[in-house]
Length: 132
Image 1: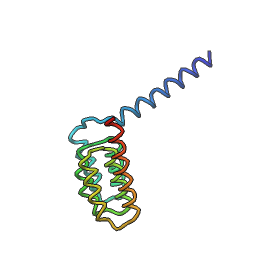
Image 2: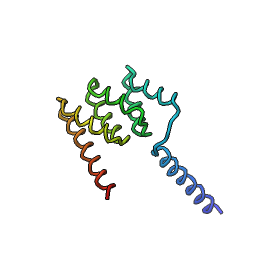
Image 3: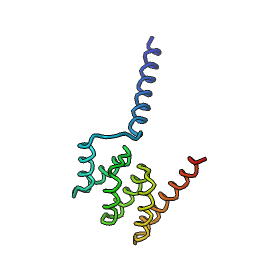
Image 4: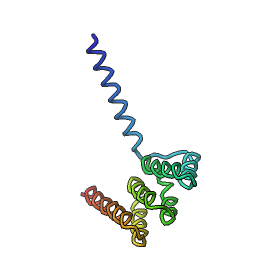
């Protein structure tokens, strides 16, 4: 009896974790207030809040934040620039990736250039793979 209950609990817990991860990654339409709050976090002066906002924009694939991220890119430090590049990759808008490529060409930090180039290359590989 205990083995059955233990297995059932493990199966239910595992399925909840998997399904919640899938639903968090899917592209959705979000309420306007939620998007506005996320944009406010991204534009915040508090670096921790800003980094969290940038990360969440990519994690939840909030398309509406892409222009804000691109506008912020030249003004940020190198860590935030890399995080912005990764979030834009997660969002997956082709025009944003091309704009990121243009912005990275004006960059002076080698690590930011390397990561932006890696993001653009991976996006191109994924585009070729999905077009097959």
